[in-house]
Image 1 (cartoon, rainbow, N blue to C red):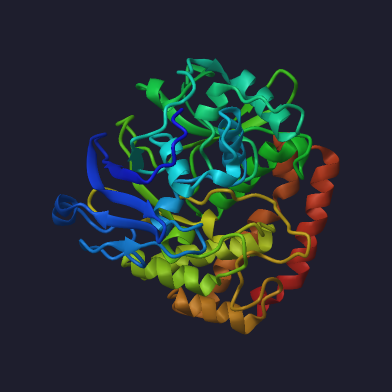
Image 2: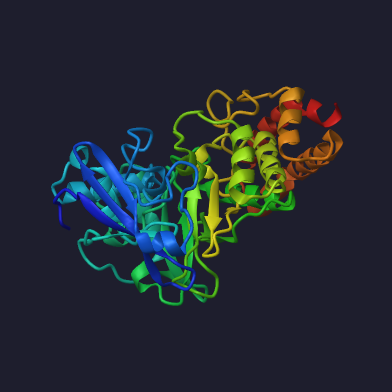
Length: 425
């Protein structure tokens, strides 16, 4: 790995057919980080970040915050939490302190290994070319690392560890006929691209974390919310890992990509702080997607989060996809699970309220979402509550431990009691 500070990068976009186009150039100096679109890209394609990044040939300086001096468009290529831990361990192994590593260095490390359509050259070389690995090996090593029982990082795990979020996971490719054999992107070939989430005893729901997320995905789907294709992989020790098919990858074209950007990156929001409201989500979605109807689907997602205790609903957990044609649409809902925060407050507020929003606040959100009447919105609320009432049955079917099922049922009942007045007003 070249450890020289990176000061210049070419930014590329992979299209749906797998071909690459040069988007522009990133450069860093003492004044900050600057980006300039390539002239040919401006002629043929669309803006990749229409809210805050000018779509012209000007030299655009990145804001100092909240992305550590990067434009939000490129900050989305970097991981947080788990992926950053892996990256820092690799840099440390090469004798580079994490305190001297710049965001540009991290983009060069990501190279082609991130999510979405963007990649960066020249990319840092990995320590070695990782070969086909066992899914079980990756999961066991990820758990040891997450639990603090080892400082060693398998190269295969480092090469697959680019996703965001705090929990141990990996971006992998596998053949559905041989799911235990996994590959990195360079060796993916015709194999399918998935994100697999491992478990740990130190997670809030322990080794039932994957089972609970699978239940939440099922219930969200029953509420007519678009979720990723997903499946559980039972292990010989009785644990289950959840795998989600990557929705930034084009079906039928293994190398094809859709451009993806988070709400956090689009609006330069700090996802670590409760910095945005669902009003912002709905309005930004309608403007970006040029569709008033999109507001209604985002309202349903917001209400599902409220009643399902998915309180880790920050701006990096909301994304949008853009194909080659340039028409944006919301991504499938992801990182949706039972995730109450210590103070019972959502990362995203509901008309200014982090919990127990009053009727007027939710009615206002519904009006922004283009419901014809409050009664029509209440039908969606009722459906969400009816679906969530089936949690005990779904949890038992999936094999969630009885104690965890009871604890979750208790909290869901409490949240229902706090908010059920919305259904009958």
